[in-house]
Image 1 (cartoon, rainbow, N blue to C red):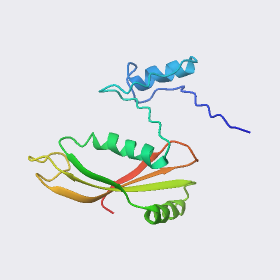
Image 2 (cartoon, helix red, strand yellow; image 1 turned 60 degrees about the vertical axis):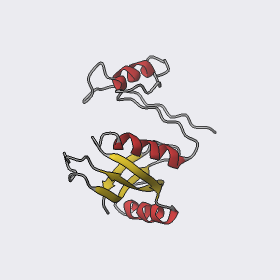
Image 3 (cartoon, rainbow, N blue to C red; image 1 turned 90 degrees about the horizontal axis):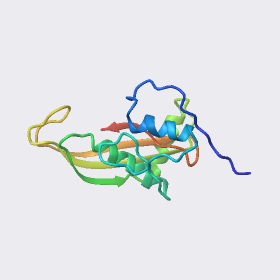
Length: 147
């Protein structure tokens, strides 16, 4: 038996009424397909990938785009052993998780610094930990930073 998941958007607490998230929620509730064009400046992203790590990496890249002025040099899958160890740890916190994926990255901060970044510095070993609660479910960026 195949299961079809349904999500119904009923209450807006954070987005502006004209945001793509809100507009697509109303389209879905009305039985229409959402706009999945992923245009520049949108707050709604549709990511379809065959491999789970690819979809998780897209979330990391989207989040990294908010690191104003930083330049990404590498993004690498940390491996099955690291991901399994982190999954075991976070399951121990009471979360019912089915999958975890860990990436490591290196990037350069803006020449003049800004925000949380030291000026003109190479950051290496920056970790990204993503989890999901069901097979094929949405990835959640649980934490990012130095471990």
